[in-house]
Image (tube, rainbow, N blue to C red; front, side, top):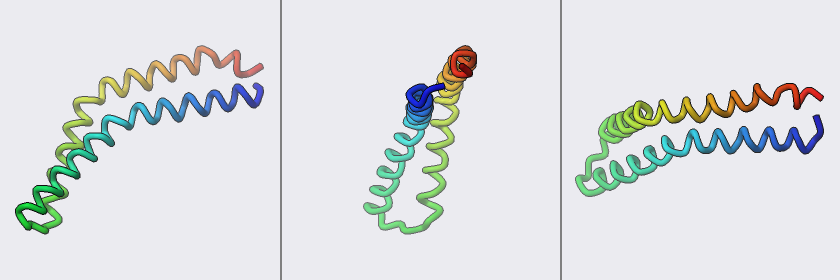
Length: 89
């Protein structure tokens, strides 16, 4: 394996990790902003009021996006294992 092939493997792994985590991070960001605005408007500063809805939104997003995330990770792993002989040279 050359240094260029190694760099390409790392690049593909990082891009796959970014694409898999992006929907969950986006939902967490939006939920955080909405909950923060609601807390600001209502002057409720209870930590549980902000934490529970954020966790609920994150869990709902995880349930919705989990099949897609598995599909992306399985396709990356399948491609990686199918080219394993090529990398061993």
